[in-house]
Amino acid sequence: MERIAVFPGSFDPITKGHESIVKRAIPLFDKIIIAIGINAGKNSMFDLEQRKLWIKSTFKNNPTIEVTTYAGLTVDYCKAQNANFILRGLRSYSDFDYEYGIAQMNKSLISNVETIFLLTEPEFSHISSTIVRDIIRNKGKVEQFLPNAVTL
Image (cartoon, rainbow, N blue to C red):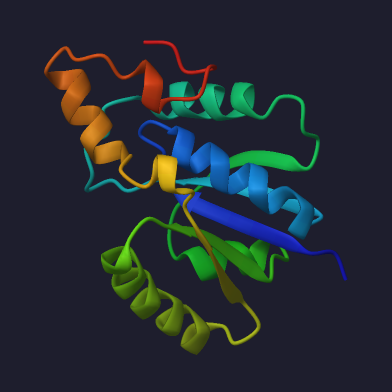
């Protein structure tokens, strides 16, 4: 059976932390689907096509990475993609506390989908898309937090 992982998120924008998690997960899976969740109730700073382009450009040299979008439950998307793994990055204990509940609910909904947590490397543990967006709104410099493919 092919080992397919879905790495869900808004990626608004993708950060070096996201990039690091995916790069470290590549040897673990046959394919990683970076799935941008579409949430009508959330106002994104960057449009969907721009986010997809940045992610595709970031991983352009890796054929095992696919970039897609989805709406609805992540586990339903996993089932549709024949993915048995959800990949998540953890920066802190509070991330674990939040993600643990989601992982348990997902497991209750579809028992054959496992959530795999990778700890963020220390040099990226302070980076979040939320903070990056705030720096952008306030005209600060964010290049150091973003993959090279992301140009503002």
